[in-house]
Amino acid sequence: MVFENERVRVLEYTDAPGDRTTEHEHPDSVMVTLSSFRRRLHAGDAYRDVDLPTGLARWLPAQRHSGENIGDTASHALFVELKDGGPARPDEARLGPE
Amino acid sequence: MVFENERVRVLEYTDAPGDRTTEHEHPDSVMVTLSSFRRRLHAGDAYRDVDLPTGLARWLPAQRHSGENIGDTASHALFVELKDGGPARPDEARLGPE
Image (cartoon, rainbow over all chains, first blue to last red; front, top):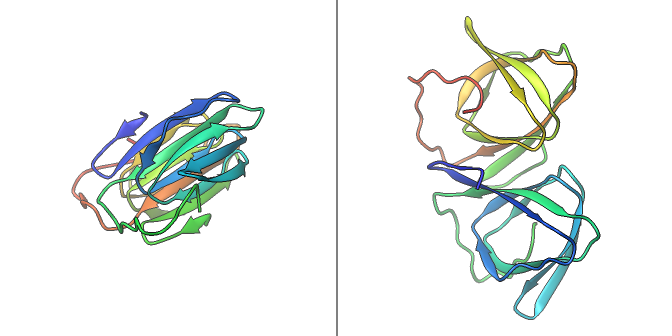
């Protein structure tokens, strides 16, 4: 964790090629990439591949998934998680950044 | 502007050594540096120098200031501006990231 206050929590994530996370939840967040990397995001039986350059900011709507580094570079990203609730839309299928 | 939705607006900022902005306002924001840079932040007669490395996330509480690139590298940063109001504390003196 980078820092937390009453409005946000900021997390830093790094991994190596081949690493895979367990399933976990994200609240509504802005993801900022600090390296370029390729990931496969899994939610149940669905998956989606994303290929992201360095220095990109993307909206990550609240979701539950696992992630797998399918590239040949380390992943390095920051997640700015938003507090205050915000609109919950659990009935929509969302996977990865918008 | 990088993107905007109902919860955030994400802005990208770049400048060159010697550049100075006019006075402007920031809402509560998370700043993420995409380069290392040095800035002098001015608010009225006060100023504060900040020296920031690449890949840093800092809380920038709502404030009004101007900024001056006093280093020898370009500034490159993202601002994740928060919507929904949030606590206003205009009576506290704040300048630059916390």
